[in-house]
Image (cartoon, rainbow, N blue to C red):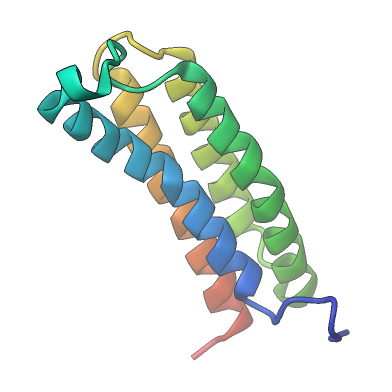
Length: 129
């Protein structure tokens, strides 16, 4: 069903991938910015506060769930769900090991890439070549 209140098919996958990619950008760009300008920013935490990790997850997860559900209803492919669960699990693990060395960045980046791959797979299953 389409209508004025329903986004076009695939739009949610794009939005969900973009939101989950915020974790990736945060993890890669914030430490660089803080490393270049710690005196200007006045922040001692090189990766930002741990609540920011959780806030990004809370923002990205509902959009991902809605996009994946809509896609699954159309194509029945369960792989995007499995990939997204793995990716969000890795990002949550990254938040849990906040400030405990490089594991935080590795887990967050890997999780963000896997969630983005889940939405790419969901989109491809909706639009087979």
